[in-house]
Image (cartoon, rainbow, N blue to C red; front, side, top):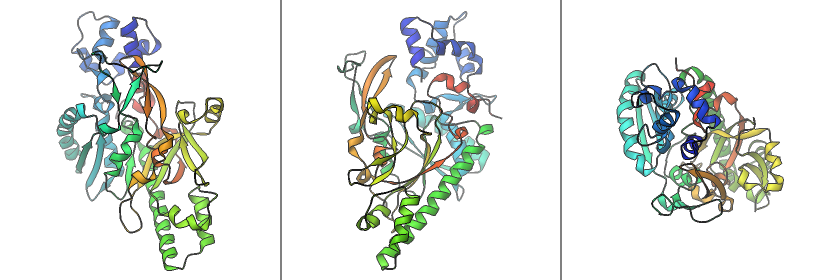
Length: 396
């Protein structure tokens, strides 16, 4: 998120991102905090350093959840707080909202401190009780990072850098959750209250499709087990609604008895990332999958850019079978779909091995439904200047 800012400090060369930050400084939610610590007559270098360095706000070393994303005429709203606001608007059940955050171990205490402060405030304002759990990405899933020339990447103290192996490693955290319906989204994909109506509407729509689909699947499984199934009807349903082709009747029950995900997909506007495709599986079936750029041969990458849709911005997951038993999600991973990505550490490029992505390889053997949702439901903050875009403008 702050790569260009680190680059400016390392090279003292102005870039467009830094210039935009300086030109719009007072529009950021962290502006008031920054003003309190800046030295008199601060230079551009001073300002940027105090934003990202541990001598200042330390934003370059904090997780996005703890950053102040939005203004509210008070002290600013963190990404975590926006998730509390959002959850209260579509995930409340019997006066309770359950929220789970995956957090790096070194930031657990800071998350806990923030939640201890804001949860009582939001409970008082909404009349809703929050049940919040934190988990860490399991360290045994970390992988070693390398430099662009494939030599081990070392930290400033000479130690090897092991880093979390992408969001695909979080399938294990998801597997530890036990709930009827699970909504998944990135920590940075939040918007302000005055731009949240589409997000709430389509979250409910995706959940409705998931519930309706699960009920029909369970009905078909019970019919198969009782010997009353119309196999032709079920075959047509699987093809038309679950997007699976080239299967035979002996596979029908196993196809139905899988975890289910309904994915909200936005129109492709050229943003970096993957998208939805038909893929052929090792068992000969053809199914709907989400494919990342690293999974496509370089000579065929144009197919990604020509696609109409972008990676899912929201997922609704159903992880119980027709008997009410929780699926073991580790059994539905395509382990051959790991990939190498380009990342950075303190402004220095590195290459990282990532496990099968959470919504592609890690869910490869799930039943999948893609639903088009409006681009207004996708307001990520991948770089700091994204916080100046419409979805992140002032809360009302």
